[in-house]
Image (cartoon, rainbow, N blue to C red):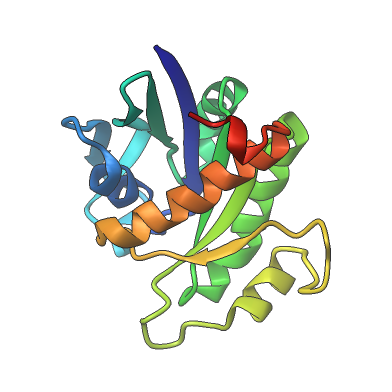
Length: 186
């Protein structure tokens, strides 16, 4: 059996754990603990190591999904998780512009370590104060006309169809980057 690995990264409260839980066909392994720092203002628990879920893509292929912790003090886990990944998603909460600078730092961290197919997933786009994709991408260091800009997908991490849609975009990027012609895919 072939195993694909995708990492879901992002700031605290962007929806990483929820994304993994929504996509996984198995009970998610998580390392949530009581928040003890400013994270407590956003949520009572936070991921301190990883979230792990699995999705069968076909009888011969499964996808392992790893959610990273959001706090920089756990960046050693980012490094461990991204090393064997085939792709990653950076989740950005569209309604929290104060987090965009930190999201950009996560993006730089990942891109300095690996060159993988990736996409930007915008969450909380339906919340009061949510910014438009162009503003968010500018904050992340991308010009909307930049040909090297990763795809942007609006994601509701609680909605399976929305999460699957993002996964389809990500899988298309993996196929494109591996130079596999769609006619070759079983």
